[in-house]
Image 1 (tube, helix red, strand yellow):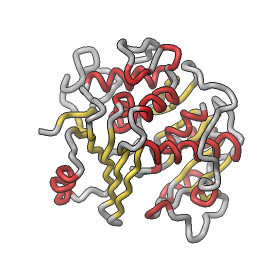
Image 2: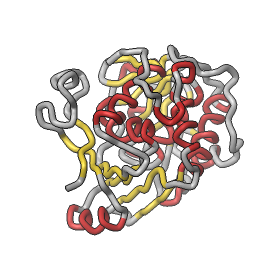
Image 3: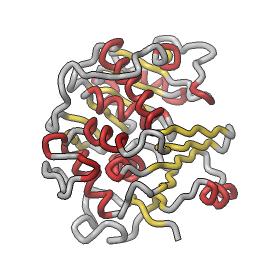
Image 4: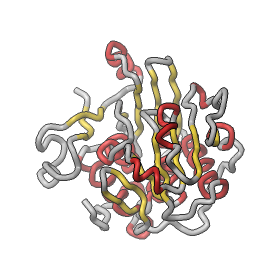
Length: 289
């Protein structure tokens, strides 16, 4: 899996000289900024949020500026992400990779304790207090509303992100060999993330017309691959669901024109011979019948 090559032909204009994740994002954005990128549902709150590629890019830029300028994090610094299945979670992953910092995911107390910053939702505030660096809290309320009372020891993301610039320029370009992700006890560079995403998109036959339903979080590499990076490699879009009500799924899938879904894979299913039984795990993307 740790392969520095890019599978030719290069997707969406990504080249070997542009094999960082910011390059992959820009290439997907260029396919059509007004296209939907992520549609989010929470069946407990009744919330529905729709983000185009352009709107997502705006959120990513603001968050990357927050990381680089307000938090003063430098490339290689680690950000522990303690967020659930939510539309703001991929925003933070993309912003970390755009700013060149390392996103650490999963419930690892050691990662939180060594991180330069932590990003936490309401249910992870106690764990986040172990971070000696900057602590950012997300209320995860509808419409991105701020906390009614900011937790002690934290900065409210909703209070500081909107004022950040709408465009982001890193102080130094993000290189392919820069560290990008820590998950499941392993580290991935920017180039390895891109290669992994390209390979998965090809293996699962994703395209810009793919509309992928996902109900997983982003706490492991298989989840991030299946419900974020592979879609970006193809310029596809996501329908992300939290607190899923199974009775609502058929109508939602029809209304959102879902044609693929994140699912557990059987041996060799949707993986290819080389991937079966490897560290990829058993999560992948399957077409909807």
